[in-house]
Length: 194
Image 1 (cartoon, rainbow, N blue to C red):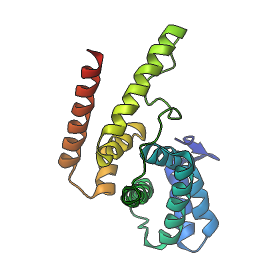
Image 2: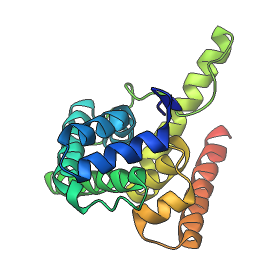
Image 3: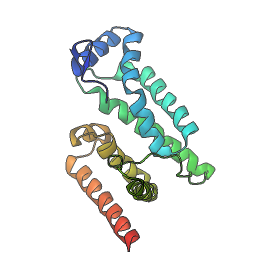
Image 4: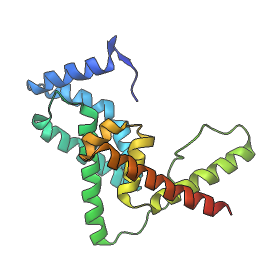
């Protein structure tokens, strides 16, 4: 995530001030807020669609839709879940259209590891890379909605309150879905080790 402070102003206060200026018609202020999220949104989109060229295109679509929809943003609500909801919608729409075009599953060699610190030795690095690649393979096997939820919860580190705002589902339902998806991953990982 971005630095905690930006020009001496706490992150949330800076963001709220920029969004207030945007509500008054300052397009540059809204653009500044979007820039803050550019890397995170691209990272999420790339993991959801797994093709770099498509991810770049879809990330641009996310920000275009956010810019067009900024008048509908409620400044009394958090911005991050609102923007992530747009990203999730764009990716879901893309998947629906892609499934109609019958696109093949993307190769895994360009994905970055999703877990852990860098290993200390070459042997540990080889094991780490193998584990990370296996985990990413399993993530791609999950239903897209489950993969999306796990990435938002653990990779993007959204809390359940933010997930409730994104999915408009009760927290208990979201916790159950996360738990079920994690159990599925755990079974696959444990089955792959034997």
